[in-house]
Length: 190
Image (tube, one colour):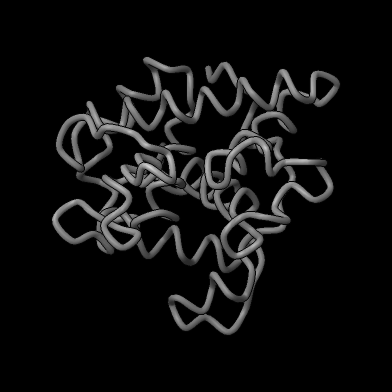
């Protein structure tokens, strides 16, 4: 059981049209997020064991880890030698930002390793904790969604639950990730 709320109980509006257009979809919302997740499903299979191990270790639903991998790197398909974001971000989950003006992280492990996934999970847990402290009256599911948004843009950019994605990439990051996670949970056994 995940320690940070139930991903299946987190309300979501899904992907924006901007995000959906990366696969030339002409629709947005949960349906677009589900289509994007499904497109990545076969590539995701090679990481299943590592995702499950890291999820259990950190109390994160494996479906959420898969969803972040899908959103960030399309299950590794968008990386060049493990790098994304113009050479600033490392690995499947891309939160390992080596830019000193960004996250200033030092990468751990190979881009597709359990060590990398653990480092990214630690960063996610850190941000969920920051959101818990910042918004103690939010439900566990609201804090989880806020933590997902903070994973993308930092907790200083999360100001309210109603506008949780106001500053995220595509203005839909947490909503898209949640919808993908729900798809992976329901349809891919994560």
